[in-house]
Amino acid sequence: MSKTLIEQIPLISNCKEIFEINKGFSSDEKFLIHMQDGNNKLLLRLFHLEELELKKTEYSVLKRLQEYNVTCSKPIAIGEVGNRGYMITSYIEGKDAEEEILKYSNEEQYTIGIEAGRELRKMHQLSAPVYIASWYARKVEKHKKYIDAYLACGVKVHNDHKIMKFINENMHLMKQRPNLFQHDDFHLGNIIVSNKEFKGVIDFGRYDWGDPFHEFLKVGIFSRRVSIPFSIGQIRGYFHNKEPDDEFWRLYSLYLAMCVFSTVIWTLKTIPNDMNDMLDKIYTYLDDHDYFGSIKPKWYQ
Image 1 (cartoon, rainbow, N blue to C red):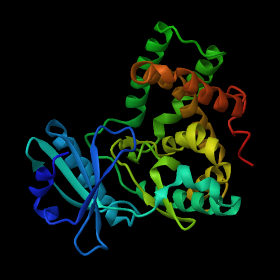
Image 2 (image 1 turned 180 degrees about the vertical axis):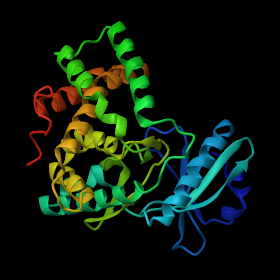
Image 3 (image 1 turned 60 degrees about the vertical axis):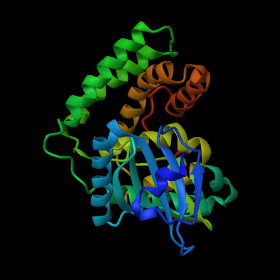
Image 4 (image 1 turned 90 degrees about the horizontal axis):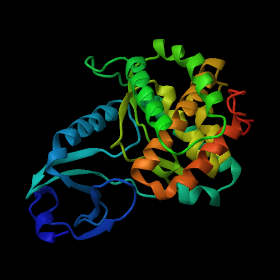
């Protein structure tokens, strides 16, 4: 990364220090910028110019989320420099919860989960633009494509017929679901903690619109493998410390079941060498639900 490029961005041209951040799956280049006053830290993302329009919509979403007091990065500037696009946001101080949370007691993990669930609820106040097609129409179409690709590929999941039957029997439940903002990658790896406290949510690059319950997929696939107290906390925090009803669990299970096939196809296309690891994750949550003989997972007690 050439320092001259950063010097061409007016807002940070007189910064004190620059550190590159090598984390996450995003193709963006990320830099932590220390400003002259020493206290102010900013996050700079550089990306391909053809992504600029897409990034502008992400930037405007971050702006809207500020109206709902969501604890996330504040958008500061967006534009182009040289042959790259750039976005500057505030920087959330702390560490990745996926790496830190197991150093905390079960009670502390649960409390961070409660906070995360409350934050997620705030995000879900934002409605989809009117031109976005219904959640049901989009999800069914995507699912059909994944099933066709799965049936044509060489990988097979045990009892796949049982999983497909469960999906077909429950798909109608998506018809009446709302079309709201989705972070779409909400798990411990995108949550920042510090001093045993929740500090904020990062990485909105994959945001989408649809059923807010779809967000809980990542609990079943990722977060529960790291911290069950956090996972239970996130669900309870979202529902104002009350128990979710059967409709939630049925939709949660439906989305996990659909995810079996999309995960296989995504892994084959993107990281085929990780297929065994991905299948491990799939079999973990299939076991959690006895291949969807049970809609509530075994770990949720």
